[in-house]
Image (tube, rainbow over all chains, first blue to last red; front, side, top):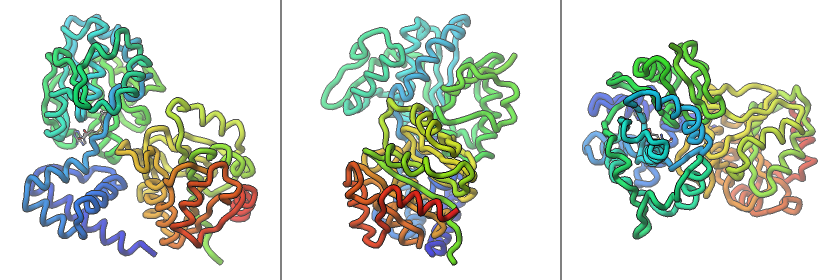
Length: 276
Length: 188
Ligand SMILES: C[S@@+](CC[C@H](N)C(=O)[O-])C[C@H]1O[C@@H](n2cnc3c(N)ncnc32)[C@H](O)[C@@H]1O
């Protein structure tokens, strides 16, 4: 019964996606639709815009408005030590192998506002690897990269982050890594002295370096299977032999062509290793 | 005669695990209509929930993986800390966006998304819970013409969830757990 209205909405969003591509070059055609439609509705609601047609005019007329739309579509929600067992596994199963390289290169793809990046940097620091590691932190969204560089996160999550840190095998006082002030926690900037931040669009940009570890968690869930496959190839091209690929807790390589060449290091935490 | 529903979505919070178990344990292993279960749960319960359901149910129980296809004779559990969305091709999508009604997974998110795919051919059931999540999702199902059921607030361990749904969807069916089980069994 609702179907007709919904179909019209969806057609309009499809047209908007095409126009955004031709005007701004951002390609959302390979994004899984359920989330895109939901985010568009949310945006319409929050901004008090009544139709997709009206939204389209605004988005195409005003690049600042487009920026805020981009924020909404590319879900940026993140946390420190999300899935502590993943970070523990990284610490126990991956970092010891990485430590055999004189110089380590890591790609954090879709790093959002940096919570995952700082969690990773803390691990590297505690395992004595931070000084000889270079991390490339990338995201489609320049605004979140700017925030990531600052390393300032709201203290409202401090309890969860602290328990996540210890659950992931943290060895120090978690509070030794940050200063808290006015409801924010500012992380020690020396943690990211070897991090370079780049805007990189997984949907359209190509491989730019070779890495020993690629982390891409909770980004591919927003892509359809076709785009996922393209990105898996991109990661495959970007990993050295015996390099590691870490996905989000509920993501899998199983359906991909490249899976033949990868073995599980930790099945529960979706950490894979490329064969030689 | 009405067409057989193609999906059952069940939401619950406080008391929802027990309530859903007592409904689902009465369904046979070949119960065709796929069932999606969205429960608010502690993150520390991660994984364990699946074992609890596997032990008690005849049906196959799976924690949802992203892009997984919705199949008959399955109970699908929403994973901790993800919202569950449903795509047009009847696969699941996962989403880590903001909490809704203080919850992730949110029942509203899954109910609303399911309606867009299954339209009136689905059933929404809300069980015991101390949260208002699920009410507006149930309303969306009702508005599409689907079947809406709440656990009898008298029976629910915590009645906030069914009562809040009753306010938004006054014409929903009110049933005790046993009756919900019989009703589901009568469909497939
Ligand atoms: C939900 S966050 C995940 C953050 C972090 N990896 C985690 O697991 O907590 C998803 C991130 O992917 C980014 N993203 C979305 N589409 C992208 C694309 N095409 N290329 C690169 N990054 C993208 C978003 O901007 C957002 O920061």
